[in-house]
Length: 287
Length: 158
Ligand SMILES: Cc1cc2nc3c(=O)[nH]c(=O)nc-3n(C[C@H](O)[C@H](O)[C@H](O)COP(=O)(O)OP(=O)(O)OC[C@H]3O[C@@H](n4cnc5c(N)ncnc54)[C@H](O)[C@@H]3O)c2cc1C
Image 1: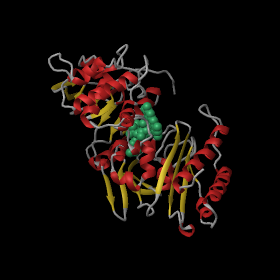
Image 2: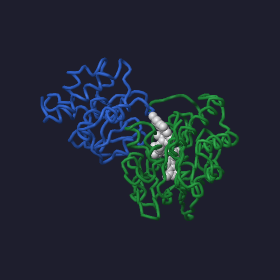
Image 3: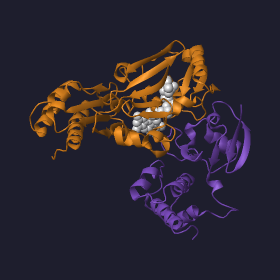
Image 4: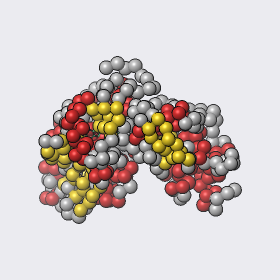
């Protein structure tokens, strides 16, 4: 891969299928020679950086992939080509899926979110993908389709080291399913640009036996949903103490990497700071 | 491939290559010189145009993807060479210096006045955040937007 920056993009053909069948047939036919374009905010930059494709297949012609559907008790179904702006403007997302809404509003900038899609965010083969940790704490799964059929997988199983998804060359991410969130749940996202993202969700705060606390970290290259946090919060101790216990536990599990953007030590500091910030905020605990 | 665009109210049919950016087609094929290249990777927002009512960075849109859409650039804001109230607000509040980013800011301000007449300072900042000015601070730019909003609320023309 050459890193020479250029203004003109190298040649490729542009295809605009108008149905899902047609889209899947094209992806099956061209496989790795073709890239899907949703918002294009990553893809065009990748092509500029040296990724080469013979075909760019636009998924925005497939209407059903741009739909958001909510059914009380069932949850939310989001098409892969739904833009981040549509999510930001959606009242159900804002009110019920707050952790996702909070993360989406912190992605890129206003103009970018008019184009950028949630599917592109999840599939983004570079390191930043701010929707993944929120989707993990919400227990989301994704539908992956090809001519061979479709499969549904918990988002966590699909995220591989280094970001990006384990898709086969003929596969396309088609929908995101998010179950009804726990009643009365609150959520928030803590972000330090290009360095750290932490998503947290809490419910039934006043009842230790039913208390729900979930937290996920997104550090390149390996996002992580920390299991076992809930167990800590089910104990009958003051919340302040439990937050301390949780942070100590999390620190043994979340081991962020060092890279050009930040040292491991700095990221460890952010784990501690961000976790404390989010848990205090969601659980209503004063410093 | 042949695409058709409505640019500032005028239908334009143009032959483009599949790999051409909307930015380049507007600027070089259609001669709309307010559309300018900045970083070309979506960071700076200088190439902002309004596509189907939405502010977008035209460096990250293929012209082919914009086929059939309705595009507004700064050229579309003035009537008979008379600047629009938003443009006049930028003059009045000195919301520019070298001018390179000005079309992007003016279009962004135009969108705000059309869609968020009662925008708070924070909301204004959230939208303006998409465009970078490297000459100076953003104070006068924000002032320009606020002045345009004020005129708009008080009933249009100054
Ligand atoms: C200035 C700037 C700031 C940014 N800031 C952030 C940020 O703060 N946080 C963040 O997370 N990201 C950020 N990004 C990255 C990017 O904008 C987002 O991740 C965005 O959501 C990607 O969506 P898209 O629709 O534009 O993706 P595209 O560019 O269309 O696609 C991204 C990749 O996924 C593939 N793909 C897309 N859709 C599918 C699908 N349905 N099935 C299979 N493959 C698919 C494409 O082939 C491509 O490889 C930023 C980008 C820019 C330019």
